[in-house]
Length: 270
Length: 88
Ligand SMILES: Nc1ncnc2c1ncn2[C@@H]1O[C@H](COP(=O)(O)OP(=O)(O)OP(=O)(O)O)[C@@H](O)[C@H]1O
Ligand SMILES: [Mg+2]
Image (tube, rainbow over all chains, first blue to last red; front, side):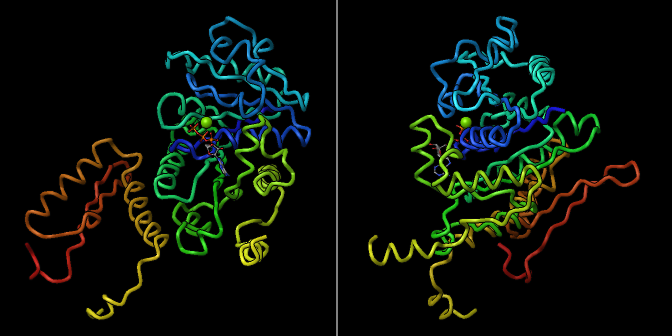
């Protein structure tokens, strides 16, 4: 069985692509056969974050339109041979993605015995975002501790419960995971930022992980290495915890309180 | 709360303000979700009409669509202000 996992949010720029790259890589590190697909037609980004931009020959839309086979379009990761990327098309034709086309590609991946297909959704609630979530078995809703992001994620949670294949056919529910990203415990302690508890209470769902705001995320994207591979970084460790929880392991949340070290560092300028 | 307390009040904790605003808007949007697309507009037009007569806050009008044994029931509730004397 292939699990289809969408990473979505509603609001743009909250960390969907960063999350897709890290979750896909983390699942592959644990031995799963994984494909990660960029659904952001016209704004290809995932290839850069995964570090395979120079190896894109064919893309998602080429496969849908029969111009390339799935095998030709899947880019094997340089670091792990059980991880593949399917790049977004740079076409400006937003109608290039169709429901039948997406279904065909997902079926093809199932035949190739993939364990997980991670779908990196574009922002918004238009066609691309709809198609990215439509076939999902599980959803990771990325939210930032900020008013517009929280409101949009509630909207997305509503769509996941009504506008997906599972909801429409009555074949079960999309398993929903809320991932709180760009969290800054110092600002939360100062009363300047919504806390984990605030977000959980407002949305009525508990978080599957909390990714701290971290400079290493930018460094990782500069290098084209998903941040989960940076074992030293707090964001990377938080993504590793998140992958474990998605697979059913229980792990306590980390990095949600102000670090003592941070305080000493501030006092002594270390 | 007296005027002195009001003047002495510390600048509001902005995360608390965010939390309260979100509680209200999320509850409001959930109540019209899944219903016909005209519900949010219906709600704001109702609000406008009600405000001709009573001054109510924007979140005072609650519209809920419920299904009751085959019928769809549109339930409206309006929270009126505490005293009738401060009407516009
Ligand atoms: N935990 C984090 N700490 C610091 N910066 C982050 C973090 N997560 C994401 N970012 C930064 O935020 C920006 C947006 O991230 P990303 O591209 O993953 O968002 P997105 O949701 O995919 O955006 P879009 O909606 O445009 O597709 C990037 O510059 C990324 O480096
Ligand atoms: Mg993106």
